[in-house]
Every structure is written in C-alpha cells, then in structure tokens.
Image (cartoon, rainbow, N blue to C red; front, side, top):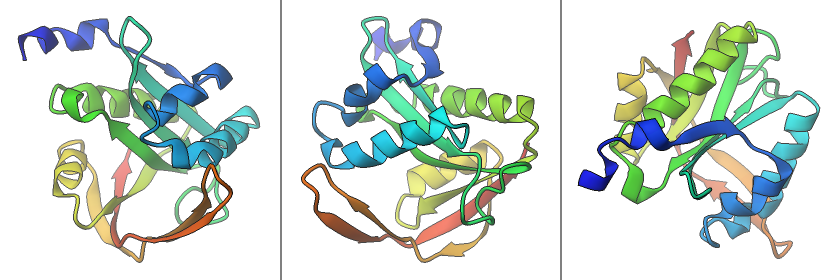
Length: 172
C-alpha cells in the first residue's frame, strides 16, 4: 500500500473524450457495455450527460462516473435542478484510497456550477460498501428501486437486468 500513499496528488480527473471510450472497458472487463458507453458519450456531446474519468499519469483509467443531467425519468434527472449519477466505479486495487470520494466531489462541484441543487443515484441492495461510501458523502436512502433495466451488448444481444437497489439522494 505504500505506493498509493500520495495517489490523490498524481491522479487526474477529467471529462471523457471519444478516444477514452475503449479504456472505459478496462481491458475487456466491461466490453459488454461498449454500446452503453457510446450512447452515454453521444448524450454528453449534446449536453444531456457528463462523463468523468480518473487516470494515472501513464493514462490508465482507474475510475469513472457518468451523470445524466436530464432523463425521461424526471424523478432521476430533470434537466435543471436534479441530476442522476450512474456508472460509478473505481478499480478494485485502488479502492479505499480516497479516489472515489475525490471523483464524486469533482462531479458534484461541477453540478453545482451548472445550477443543479440535488443529485440522485441507485445502489444495489447487496453492495454495502458502496452504500456506506455514499452515506459518508452525504447521500441518504429515500426509497427503493426495482432495478430493472436492459442493454444491448457488444455482440448485439439484449440483456435484461434485475438488480434491486436503494434510491439515494443528496442536496448539493
């Protein structure tokens, strides 16, 4: 762990560019989300979403978070006052070093600058570590979510996901 002592001083948090999309797949671990990432990036180009990443000096992506500024589901993101965080992850070997907290702080500060007053997110009911992180950052459980969603993978196959979640909110 000594090599991570000053990691917050060497990481870079920045917006995702088109050339970053392959790196978000984390050497194939998230390849199945390729189309989701492309759509999130497309939405960022028209001002509906913001995509952030964390990279090391050698350009290795070790974290990411996506934010819907507006959504068809207005209870998640209304385009003006409430935004929705999703796709938040930090590589396992870099967790518990403050990187996730720093990434969320950066994203939240950006939302405040954009005039947003609150943010929502869903966390899997069985992901206690993430829920505790969000609670430390000021998020509170406001209800449940059935966690039903679907996506088309990199091979063109549809996947239906059921991941019961807690809905959490924070006032910015």
